[in-house]
Image (cartoon, rainbow, N blue to C red; front, side):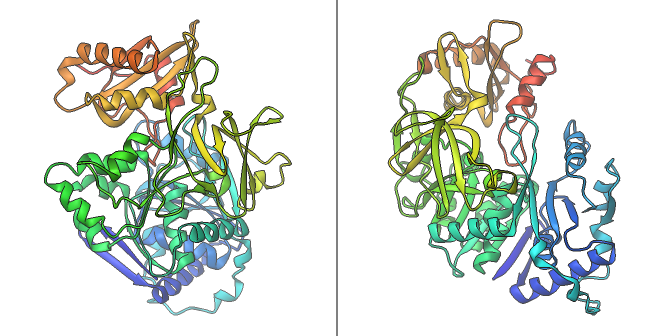
Length: 512
């Protein structure tokens, strides 16, 4: 095993022995600051060599650990972080000193700079490892917050090991693999699907912080090629961005950098069938044709619920029609449930059969503590259907837009808008509002480069395209300022926040 952390200045690489030794030293230093096995440790900051060690230190010593993300004074970010800490009630918060100053939590604080001074391994151990209780380890992670306030859920060591083992078997992974990631560690796919999975497998891992990766697109091909990855996990938005930025001459170079891929996981939201096809076929192809692995998961189930096996071509079918909705929507299979997990589709107390849309309910060994003993399993809030053993996810129930006799999910509207070429990829949000009555359908978009002055034309054209494609007449189509659509740290739009800003009149319209 080795871990490489990239930065614009270079890279740091550690082997398994170094990681184990430094993580143990870090755990000892935390215990010297009052952390005992079972205490709640919250970690702030971007992905770094230090933040990568905290997870291993928690596993060794038996801490409860939560990654919070970067703390900035940007609108809403600081308030969101403080709200999460209020819900979490940690015993200690560790992170960069500049970030800790702005927190309102009463928990003890420890600056990373102080914890690493002197550098790890420069001070001999004092035998404190005898106080470690690894069985007390817990991972507390927050739900995505795409449709409501993020909530903490507790993942036991057993649940984590069950999910990691099932992922390794499904992906046919081993110590010979190489994982590359630019996802944040406060996201379940970024932490469990990369850092903790590589620790479980003993394989190579290359990490790049989201901020560094997004700031240096000219180096993507170089970084990926050097890592020779066999596995990269990312949501729709991540793969869409990679494809969008790898344009022109860079596309063939990026295609060569990705030629070692065996498992390109795409998940975290209903998988985009058009994006799948663009990634593996035609002139825009980036990935080896048999490498794309659609998957479905959520923090409440540790990480993954289902996934296709590597080498399986994406299975795309037409969704069954329901309640006035269009019945020609294409849906990508999220694969078969992992070992130890099962899914059922339910409508209230009734279990549905194949090709009947209802709420996805998950049962099994890797559910978070809050759901593991629930007799009915985990009601996910996601809608979908089954076809034999395969699961198909159609969208979030709370996101569903029911307006003017039609029933559609917002991502259907957003995909039509993005396919127009008039808006920035990943920078659209659709939702419905019920106040004032009747319910209205709203689409907000950030304009593509060079189109801002054509605001009226863009709004009129997008409304027409959605009407033609889905039979939905949008009540509001609005071009907004770049960067004004709220997103989660993993790149998904925060619909609830977008709706709240819209109703409060806070959305900034693009200036012509």
